[in-house]
Structures are given as structure tokens and as C-alpha cells.
Image (cartoon, rainbow, N blue to C red; front, side, top):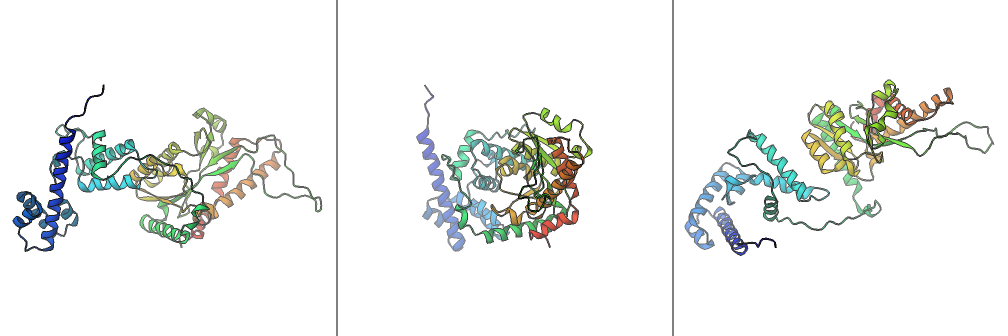
Length: 410
């Protein structure tokens, strides 16, 4: 049988009594702040709190008020019993609480533990404390800590519910206000970090056959310009270009469908210089996921920023906004800015005036090679090469123009 809980009733009574004293002291301090002529002895008697507790807290409160320290005034009115054992200050716990409430999707206990451990490590580094100091008990963010943290901050664990919201159902959104806020946020980032430190990345599928939209036939034939192929026209690879507001282009990346790195051999064997300049990833779906995002941030974005403050514009695709991705970006001093859902065609530079010209360039390259070597088979390797050549062909002026057409720079 499970062990019987003990002292539960007594513990709840002790906690309730401490809370009552805390409320009484807060009320007494508020009354004294409103009317300094009131004596502390009278206030202690009226509110039913110990005089010396009220006197100590009022002394701290008055000192913080004279110094103009609002946070200190708030902290002075709160009980500090057991403060030597606390993992966080009141301000630090407030940061943790806000990060939990702002998380999307909602956090579970394990995610709260990870966030608490990271915050504790950051606090120790900021305070200049060594991790190996024996005098300090190691903080583990135990289940007890999480339970107490939730109780102190009036947080509860509820069942999750998944709601599907289509863009039609979101028709009540104020798109104009969202767009204005987004443009303002991006322009502020450009002013704060510089055009070279503000990026836009987006995934783009590339087909094995970048067939031109039109072809020449005899007038009046009423027949399409036919092209024949032995390849599966549905096969695609995922590329994700990344451009800066200054017109620079980060390394082109591509995702090949496969389970292991062996899947890349069909791309790397006998690869041309253009292919070797592409950063390759694999995924079972052939699409981006959290692991690829984290690796891309580390391998491609970080070498460009050098850890300096920067901003990255992303659409609302789920893999872009996982908890791990947001934490990694925060550690890199990388601000993530989301394009308002449904507005990428007008507000995302890559969609506004970059992916289109790059598609046209891919089609022109494919047709040129097909006319020169009609017997040559299409392959994923050639698709990656074509994507890189088209990416490199877009000029710096055209790249920067895409940002201007999205109203993000002048």
C-alpha cells in the first residue's frame, strides 16, 4: 500500500496562518503609506499582525520609496522567511511565471523544469557564482518546487484541447493592425541591429523538373507544348533560402527525404562546386522539423551574427516556433518575428519578390540544360544544383528590393 500522508491538515493550517499574516502586513503597509501619521503600533493592532514584523518591513519599504525603487517597495512588503533557501528572487520568479503563461503551446511540468533550470543557471552566471560551490545546495527543480511554484503563482494543470482554426474563421482579425505592428517591429529591428543583422528565411519546394510555364508551338495547333520525362514529377526537395535586409544571402540549405546521412550520397557523390556550397539536411518527411531548425541556427545563422543581437523573420509554421527553437534563439540574442498568418504574400520579402524570380531562374536553367543535353536524366542532385545556381543569380539590389516592396525598409 502507498505510504499514508502525514501532517497534511497541520501543514495546511500553518500555510493558511502565514498567508493571513502576509495579507495583514500588506494591508497595514498600504494604510501607513496612504497616511504616514498613523502609528505602526496602532496599525499592527488593527490588522492583527506582529508589530516587529510590520516595523521591519515598513523600514525596508520606506527606504525603497525614498530611493525611488518601485520593485524594492513591492518586495519589501512580502515575507522573506526562508529566503536563504529560495532558488529565485521575486523578480526572477515573475520572469519564470510570465514565460510559462506566454508559452505556446502550453508548457507541461517537464518544460517548466527545463525553463527553471535554465533561468537558475543564467542567474548564477550573472551573479558570478561557480557551479561547483559546495556551500550551495544544488537546484534540481524538483516536483516539489514545481508544485509550490504553481501554487504561489495560481497556476494549474488542465487537460489540453486542440482547436483547429482556419483562416476563414480568423476573418474577424484586424489584419491592418497586425500588419502595422509587424512592419513597425521589423523596422525597429533594422534600426536597432542594422540591415545586415535582420533576416528572412522560408521553405520553398523544388521539383525535379522546373518546367517553364509556356512553350512555343505552331499557331492554331490547339495543342500544349508537350514535354516528356521518365521521372516522378511529384518528387520534390525542400530548400530554404535566407536573405538579409542589406541584400546579402546566407548559405542555401536543402532537405533530402531520408532517415540517415546515407541518403545524401545521391547528392554528394560527384557533386559540382555549386552543390558542395549547399548545406544539406535529411528528414523522413522531407520537410523541416525542430532538429533541423536548431542545427540551421547553429551552423548557418550563428557564424553570420557571431552572437551579436539580430532578428529573424519567420512565418507561422509550427517547427519555427517550438520551445527549443525559441530558447536557442534567445541564447543567440536572436529576436524572432512572426509574419501575420495569411499575410506572407504581401509582408514576407522572400514571397513578395524573391522566390518568384528564383523560380523563373530555375526554369531557365532547366530548359537550357535540357536543350543542350536532352538525354540527360533529371535527378535530385541536379535539382539541388539548379536551386543553388538560381539562388546565386539573384542580385544584391534585387534582394534588397524585396524588403522595400514589403514596406520593411525604405
